[in-house]
Image 1 (cartoon, rainbow, N blue to C red):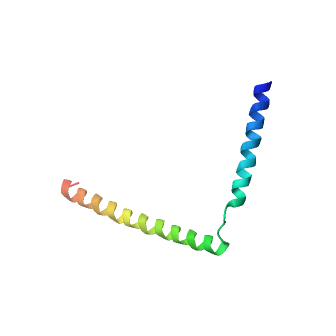
Image 2 (image 1 turned 90 degrees about the vertical axis):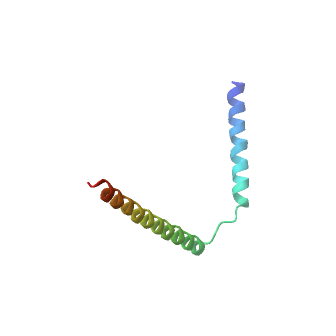
Image 3 (image 1 turned 45 degrees about the vertical axis):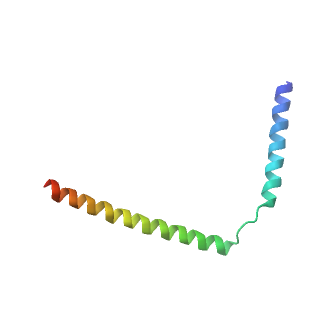
Length: 68
């Protein structure tokens, strides 16, 4: 029974510390979050297109080289 009480007390302490740390966080504004999300999405699209073109080129080259 003591182990269960100790476990719940440890969990309670942990959650209190998490809440205290989350209060210290400086959250970005909605505007900034939208901007950064747009930058990430655009970057992912550019990299995906680059990889697609690179893969298609390698595939085409392999097909021409192997004669299939």
